[in-house]
Image (cartoon, rainbow, N blue to C red):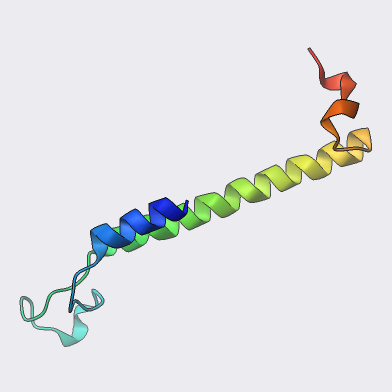
Length: 79
């Protein structure tokens, strides 16, 4: 995931650019950064947190039902 953030940072960086808040800018006076890149980075963070939470919830349920999280001891799960 760190490489994704680095890639998005490299794509969206513009020297001397400001945040894309247009209330104080006349269009075309100063360069602004692309807000889509910021949205993609935020989405990546949210997806990573969601996957981590899902895996933690599955691990907790596994511990409750089988009283262990050791893969060698989980013989009941073998096909």
